[in-house]
Image 1 (cartoon, rainbow, N blue to C red):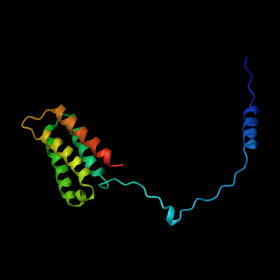
Image 2 (cartoon, helix red, strand yellow):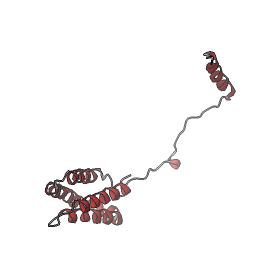
Image 3 (cartoon, rainbow, N blue to C red):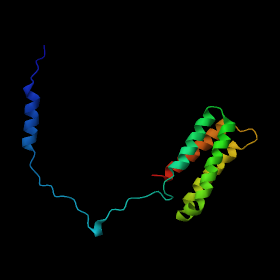
Image 4 (tube, rainbow, N blue to C red):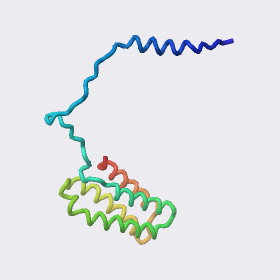
Length: 134
């Protein structure tokens, strides 16, 4: 039969606290020389493009390819409108995402689109966006 000692855990906590030396903690201050720069996505916020790609993927998965073809047009439109400002920010990243978008659009615009090809191209697009949108 095991016995419980309700006081024992409290003693361990107290002993551990007493055994730890007290350390003076100084406030952390940044000078202009130590300013922290956080990395930013090369093309800015890509979440709106990703949202449309994810939405299109869900539509394809539900078997509504004609509707997905219409939805991917929204992606094409907003991407094309943003191209003038985004492309100069990082042309290489812009081209990588643009190529992934083009592949997804082409898959959905086939005369008889294959759902698995569309799913694969949309997943690739989402992964490409995620790679550059930290």
